[in-house]
Length: 286
View 1 (cartoon, rainbow, N blue to C red):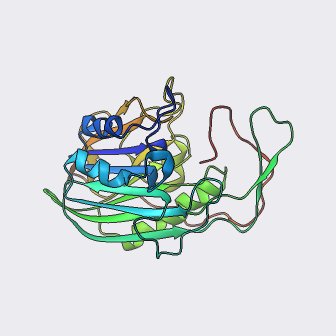
View 2: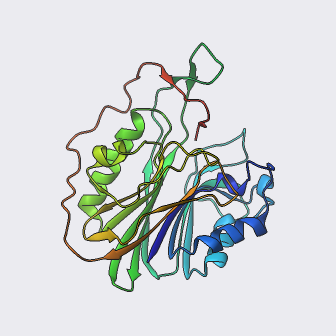
């Protein structure tokens, strides 16, 4: 099967600064992924023509199941944290999973933002800015894949250095304890390779630079595995003509030798205010 993760920047192209739904659907179709994890997904937002981008992607992929989880509601500039009671017709932004295989169960893992703001130094500024990060979440899908059960998780972790590692440790530790193996975690983790694999203890299935889209120098997007699942060919970082990230695509198979994937036994105190961090040129606050 083909797995893919894609931070879609709400379907916008950095070339012409436009959201074109037909172009977005074409990009998803070209990825030809059996299971697709999406981040920075709009639903009912004016900037993306009021579309449900998860539904657009599902139709383009020929999916039988899909789900969107809001991490923010409202429109840019007036965001608020979701309450879990949002309905279609309310502007929202979040993550999604699109699957050609039936999904037996869905669940959401909520990662609340830290209670304290953190100093981040942005390009062109000599003085750090205190930033309060947005809520983060992971979407867990229990699939009936042709070769057997598979748990796929989509996540978009914080851009704040250190706290993204804390989120990754806590998420993978929870998944290793609770999810049916094998488990594949996909998404924009805002962590460079190989640090993502080293921090989580999980097996990387895809190695390719994904950011920035034009001349990628960093791998912020990952496919990490826990249990008997393996890549059957090298991953591809695909420039779809959309977003500031490339999509990351990898063919995988279930079974084979089980690779032990211990998770870290401890995590840093997420609410401890770190020192000022440099927000690298070209990166975004999401």
